[in-house]
Length: 236
Length: 291
Ligand SMILES: Nc1ncnc2c1ncn2[C@@H]1O[C@H](COP(=O)(O)OP(=O)(O)O)[C@@H](O)[C@H]1O
Ligand SMILES: [Mg+2]
View 1 (cartoon, each protein chain N blue to C red):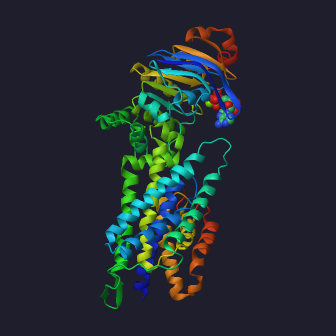
View 2 (tube, helix red, strand yellow):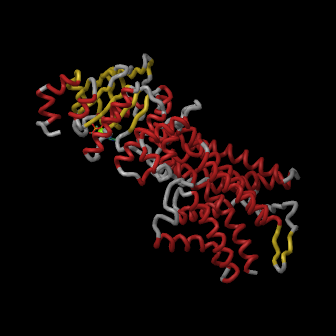
View 3 (cartoon, helix red, strand yellow):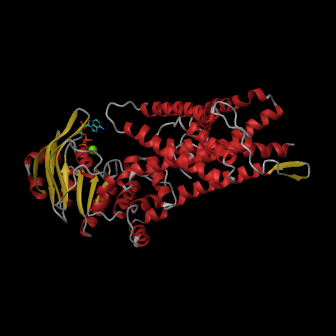
């Protein structure tokens, strides 16, 4: 579904991504692991159109989409839940969700909004509150719900569990699984490596802008190098 | 007497509010003060003078003409003075501000050429019509100005609060990247915002021309500085702040002229800023475009 071939990306003169290639198969959950500063967010920015790669190619559903703007990619079915959630703090919860459906022209928006409120009762409860007044976990739910309102084919999630309490993290991973089971392909960036690999089908490891390992999730979970660097002992 | 002054103050304040809204909208989406806004406002006033006095056309034609021309000026400003500087590596973040200062100088000089340096009267056909309610005299011009301003403010608030395009503008003002991730064509939204803000400036130009029966090439600068003062007072990028700040300044100026010394009239705006900022540095209404 998504195929990235040899992209290089940089901020000004500082090159961050070096010849990154990866593939996401339709219907799967794929995880990108990597330490802080490895280039995970930069990868997500490149895929979603926030950052134009200097070279390389990004294909989505067989079509070359390299260099398209985020709003153009959203129309093709690529939605990003950015790092730090990026809730519209000055707009209400309902308005945030409506903005998720901004590009849609069909007539199911109202019923989809209702379904979303049923799925996330806390959002219904806080419907009229400003997005900025929600807790971190609630904001993450809102960010994910907002992205789903756009009916994406591919959902990109950049560290959705960052800064959340363990119980909430478990909830988020459950939601990710559900989203995938309902037919949406997911590309996930996580530092919570063990939990991420458990829900995903395959994974990539990024180190200082390069892919250094890739494979099926269960292989990565048992790879001694990965265990050492990203999974630690039996901690999580 | 008091009520008459109150009416004068509200009339003036409602015009100030419209001017300040133009500043606040552009500041909201672009994060810069549009220093050319005052001159676009002045052009609106001159177009009004041309249409009503030179062409002898009715007032609504003047409004339509001013709206169209200032909207086009807004488009040109964004297209040729602002957009080329955006997202360019190595361009200082002050560049767009300086660029609008350049445009303002250009427009002021252009207006000297086109309209001459002098003072042009603005005769509304109903300028002399007034009503007597008890001891109070209210001019029809004042009512027209106040009603147009209020309708404009209500329409803008409704548009920002309830329509899809208005929400997209607010999202863009809050976070450009997030808005674009949600499917908003932010380039188009920015262009539309500068156009709307400029057209509002054009409308305000005619209102000021009617209120003071005078239009000059310098009026852009002084109104621009007041608009700036108001959005600092109300909170940069705040729509409610611009409205409230405009009314406060209009009332304050009117009362200082009546009960104080008219020489201080233009100092009021800046005195008010200093006082407010000492007490509330974020302005009366905090930040960002909200309704
Ligand atoms: N806007 C930016 N400007 C300059 N350098 C950046 C910017 N964003 C990230 N970087 C640098 O790029 C590298 C990769 O960052 P990032 O992709 O955010 O990593 P990760 O998401 O894996 O933590 C880091 O060294 C970071 O300092
Ligand atoms: Mg990151």
